[in-house]
Image 1 (cartoon, rainbow, N blue to C red):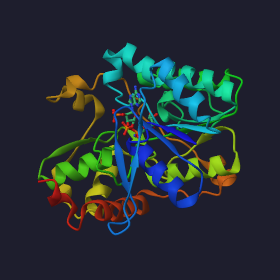
Image 2 (cartoon, rainbow, N blue to C red):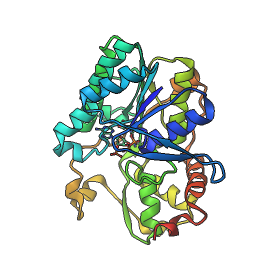
Image 3 (cartoon, rainbow, N blue to C red):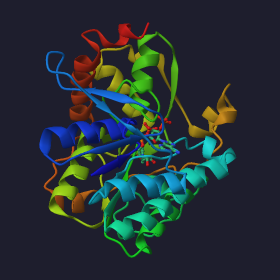
Length: 319
Ligand SMILES: NC(=O)c1ccc[n+]([C@@H]2O[C@H](COP(=O)([O-])OP(=O)(O)OC[C@H]3O[C@@H](n4cnc5c(N)ncnc54)[C@H](OP(=O)(O)O)[C@@H]3O)[C@@H](O)[C@H]2O)c1
């Protein structure tokens, strides 16, 4: 199995779970030459990654034809929603052209592709959404991810697409993880502003990684939504984060998304966002035998995971 973006937030969780749950050979790739520690301090294993920039067609072709994986799990992506509005070419190359390169060579070696997409393929007018609802992205990032799905749908190869939403969990990587950024800011005693009118179904990264492993093992194809079981606004999510991590809830200020844009730094919130978004994951729960976490359960898993990764007193570690 070949994993792209294996050093990212989701990628690292997927790698660790494949190592724990299956005995398949893993070919790990990351943009940079990276290593990852897995196991306990006593029994640490260091995994070396092959450097792979997924936007480079020849490099993708070279590694896939030389290693001949049966499954490619694509965890690479340009995930910065607001930056995608201004770095359109880069966002397209990373999110769409890369999938074209992977699909082209996967067909040649007869590999299956597992790909990760987003709730931002929807406009948020009729959430929560199931797999049969029609997508209609309102920002450029959402358009690139929908285009990447369409590449796979028309590529004539076996594939599985997971759409997910506001992923959170234990990691040292603060990007792509709203919950960790809240923990860090409140841990530093900073006031944060959280939107009262931006809804989503936050997803524990461990649940998403398990869905990917199960779909691989059970050879499940097609489209799956995998998200948490609660649809709530950022403000309520931030309050729950503060409660579980025993941080000061009074530092969290409610604000509307429109007001947030007017605050200092608001000019960087360039992308339009669906207001009430969220995913229904019944198909994944049934087909893959998943029990998806609610926010309180998920945050407790995240806290335990951070303690394992970083030590006892999480917020102060970041001072
Ligand atoms: N996080 C969320 O809330 C969320 C929600 C919906 C969908 N998703 C999707 O989930 C997938 C994984 O994202 P994530 O949350 O794990 O974010 P992440 O931590 O930023 O992981 C993305 C990975 O892609 C790598 N990458 C970027 N450009 C690359 C390139 N040209 N070649 C090779 N690797 C490249 C990044 O490498 P560097 O570290 O070197 O930049 C990073 O390791 C993405 O497809 C994303 O769209 C995430």
